[in-house]
Length: 117
Image (cartoon, rainbow, N blue to C red; front, side, top):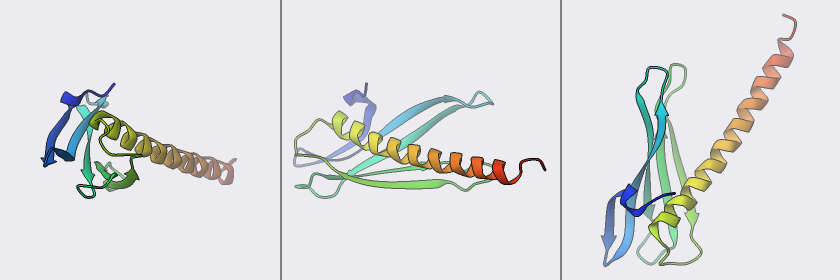
């Protein structure tokens, strides 16, 4: 469950939330180093219900870093920041699921064409 104190670097304009950050703990990698993703949430305008989530997944040996920009609209203003954060993370999760499906299809197709070789 996301708590307000976990939403850092909060910025307001006339008591209206405009942006904040959230750090998602991913555990440790194979070298026992802490891993996390930092998400930045920014409101489109003061009177807008549109938010933009941005994050970057660090590069790995065979691929460059990946930047994600996900815009979404909340149903109304005045919603808790925790809900705004959770909604953005859900959209990011859907994007990850779509990419996992694509990579699974690639894996399957390569397995099929290289079978028996």
